Amino acid sequence: MLTTRPRGTNDLLPGEIEKWQYLEGVLREVAELYGYQEIRTPIFEHTELFQRGVGETTDIVEKEMYTFLDRSGRSLTLRPEGTASTVRALLENKLHAGALPVKFYYIAPMFRYDRPQAGRYRQFHQFGVEVFGAAEPGLDAEVIAMMLDIYGRLGLKDLRVELNSVGCSDCRKVYRAALQEHLKEKLLELCPTCQGRYKKNPLRIFDCKSRQCQELVADAPTITESLCPACREHFSRVQEYLKELQIPYHLNPYMVRGLDYYTRTAFEIVAEGIGAQSSIGGGGRYDNLVEECGGPPLPGIGYAMGMERILLALEKQQVKLPLSRRQTIFLAALGKEAQKAAAVLAQELRQRGLSAEWDYQGRSLKAQLKTADRLGAVFTVIIGEEELQKGTVLIRKMQESRQESLPLEQVGSYLEKECGKGVSEDGAGTMEREKTGAQDSKN
Ligand code: HAM
Image (cartoon, rainbow, N blue to C red; front, side):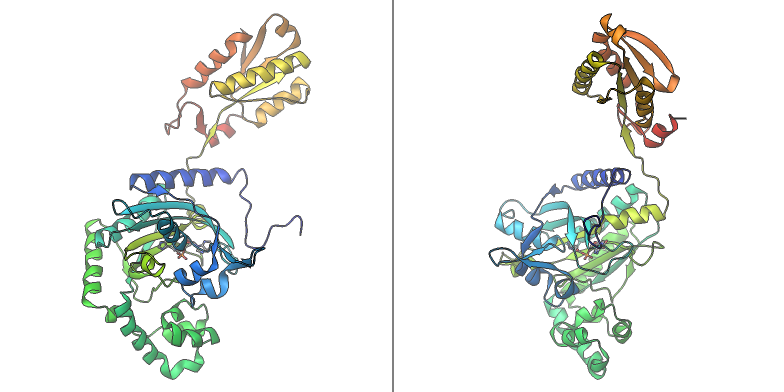
């Protein structure tokens, strides 16, 4: 117990974390290009927020929430998703008081008590965006385009956009009745959870993981047939925009998404051939949610992508990310005085923006050079006791195995200049280079 993490959680370790940092960099950059601002909300909220926001009869609320009482007996829940929290923060901080629309993004851990498997975890991370105050179909198309832009920049291929309209509350009343009528004769064949959903919220039967329930709704009437003229018009305009933006999509009239707040446009992005958890992102419009949470009538739309799933898809598609690693300078010190000089020089180098490490343990030169090698140091500064008395050090350029003597006080400016020379191919900057390059240099 003490040495195992809870089921469905992951440690993100060096070696892997560089991919996360790269991914986060791309997400932040694109979010800003599209005019989104970052928002960070608490990891837990009042349970009621998700019950009301996400919906009482959803799988998330019925089966998957991490809910607990705090020491004062309040019911709190680790957030299973980001939309409800963002709406709460919008209202609490009156973020909708100024010019509209307002656009937010988040990168955050989410928690769902789901059955863990590759791509499905109990703690996972989402990048999500939420826009408030614009009901127009052009925005629906733009958020889908933004998702594809992100996946494209990362190098993902073979993606499918699944698109549907789940209508407004009027359309859903009609559809609900049609669905109940369809299932009337088969009610007892539904699983016990779906028998409850039949009365309260028959749309949720589409989310059921039981094969039997899936088969029972496979030939159900579609929501498309129940759309009111205004929702039909909105949906067709979304599709016009998508065509204009040259975004291919598949209409999937049975895709209702697992959260109750959706209205009109709903979409999911599926990565072909990456296994069972192939939905790498999804979202939709939620024009009634703000009002349902106690705010003014304010339309909303957003999406979230599973970051673990993106990384998994990249791996499956063998996409090599252009990861860069900071160059390091290693200071090998021989003797106590030399160690002090190394400590001081390391600080100076860091002030100059160079990454530096030195040997704290006073080991042999051979051992220290081995460390320099392991770190992939570009330069090693050898500070010997005798040379130090003369005020000089040796500088070894590791790749070229060439070394030269230099006055100690000139080392900082010399290395700053040397390290500033090479700008890596991807333009990552003077102190960055390809990670693979770092490994190659050892040979
Ligand atoms: P969602 O479809 O529940 O939507 O989740 C969005 C994405 O999160 C999924 O497409 C998937 O990539 C990832 N995901 C979900 N559950 C897991 C899990 N257990 N393990 C790993 N990844 C997972 C929402 O959460 C909505 N809040 C999206 C949204 C924002 N709609 C409007 N605004």
